[in-house]
Length: 93
Image (cartoon, rainbow, N blue to C red; front, side, top):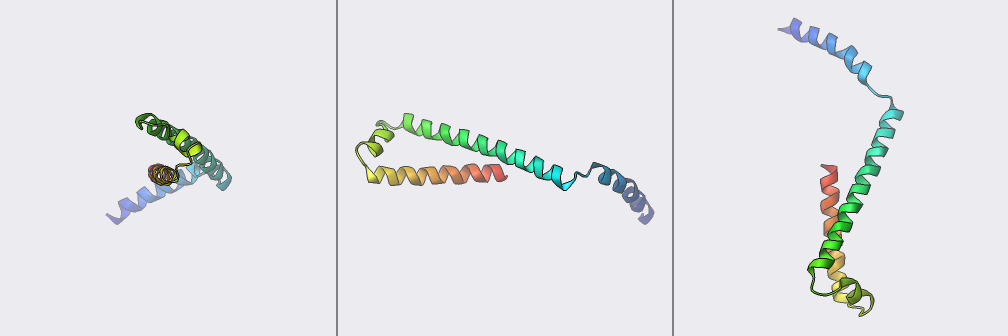
């Protein structure tokens, strides 16, 4: 039993070393992934805000911007923070 696992390890080790990427390649791959996930997160966040604007019977932008509705601004801020946390958790996996 010990001999079989040793042969598997001897076979797998050179293969793993051959497939290993350099630190620069890994950094580039991680940066590209971070940019892609950031863009996906921003798009999903924008769609959530657009959906929230369409669902409410009043204009959120008008109420906060023109009417200076501080209570609505606080609630929308909390919703935005919650959506951001959910998107970040989904991206992190």
